[in-house]
Structures are given as structure tokens and as C-alpha cells.
Length: 164
Image 1 (tube, one colour):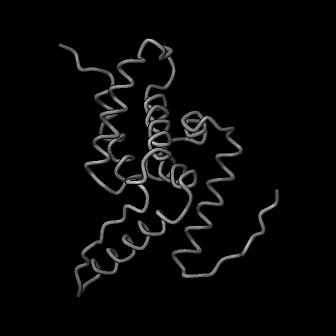
Image 2: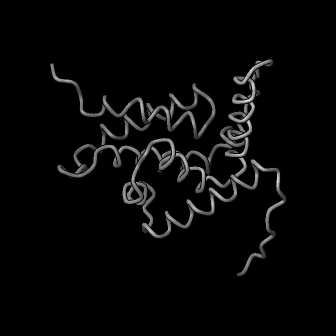
Image 3: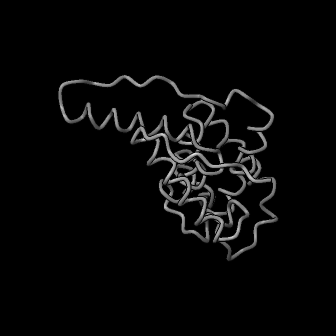
């Protein structure tokens, strides 16, 4: 029996879900929901298009829908034990600080950082997943990287006025 075409994408879907949610159990639920939806809607998948991007689109939409209806995913930042006494401790502190900073940026910026930085999607693939123009993906990525840089350096950052 041949393996289902979704199988090769499960590890990257899970990695993305864990990075989004910072909770393996919730991430596994999101991956399962994504695969279930993918199976139900597989007839809508256009042969020859990017299956990975299609699955990430499904996951992103599920994440956004569930985020708006469930507060359990917000601020889910479990404590990290940091070993001391060597270079590994410093790397662990940096990783912990990065993960905490990642939770402080907007969900839209976090999704772009994770899709492009962690999952190595192209700008075009990320734009497809997020249903955005490529230019918007590029500008959000730049703003997200700058916000992370500010947070990681402990800077106050520029205070911008909201224009209506």
C-alpha cells in the first residue's frame, strides 16, 4: 500500500504548529485537525500545485479560526530550564529569549517568521499560505525581524502612532 502524500509533510506541519503554540499537545491537535480537513477537502486540491503550501494554508486558517475562539493558545509560554556553566547555557538563554520575544510579536508576524525562517518557504509560498500579496509578506517579514531585534536587544523601540 502506497504512503499518503500528506505523510512527508507531517514533520514540518508539526514543527510549525509547535513553534506557533509552544505546546506539543495543542500542536498535535492542530496537526490532526489540519490533516483531517485536508482529507475532507482533498478533492479541492489542484493537481500540480504545491501540496505543502496547501496544507500550511489549511493549518494557518485553522490556527486563526481557533485563535479567535479560544484563549488557551494565547501567552502559552512554559518556563524553560536553563543549564548553567558552559556555552550551552548561553545558547539556551538566547533560545528562551527568542521564543519569548516570538510570543510578543503579532500572530501575523509570528506566522511569517515561522513559515519563512523555520519552514524555509519562499515568499511566494508564504504569500499563498497566508493569502497575501508577496510584497505584504516581505514588508511584514521586515517589520517582524525588526521587532524581534528590538525585543532581543532590550531596546524600547520606536513608538509609532496609529493612523486611522
